[in-house]
Length: 177
Image 1: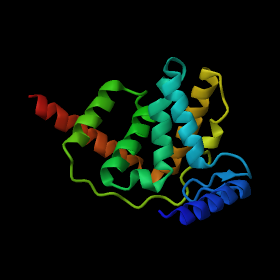
Image 2: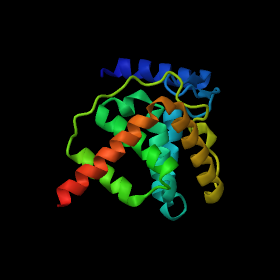
Image 3: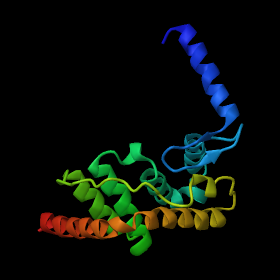
Image 4: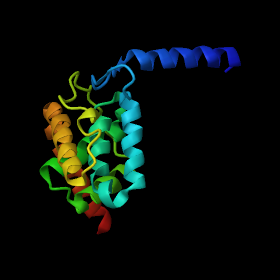
């Protein structure tokens, strides 16, 4: 990008931040000079990696909640299945590690999946619900509330997630035989 365009882009970017923004995917509204949706994601991810003893146990759930609320992260059927089924495992199976491993193994076989259209509303809570919480226990509770909100928004796809999880359990069992 030519330097004059970089300067123009920087000025426009700073003006957008100063004016506030609304995420087109999750609906989060950032007031002027508040971090945007993507900036909140980056801040929380950085904290997960900087303080894993305190926050890592909630990482996968936060990632799944964020991704199902943002179309770019579930663009392919495989990524949609990974994050939707990840929420299902968390919400309905108590974060069962064997179910998560089976899902990962099944997705690594590139199953033939049809991706449905995403719902317009993807949850009443956004990443902003968990931002600023420093107590790990309170943060974990807020992540679960956010994930529940995202999962509930996908209620029309719960049976699809359960079907895919059933498929992956039977496929991985067959491959072990």
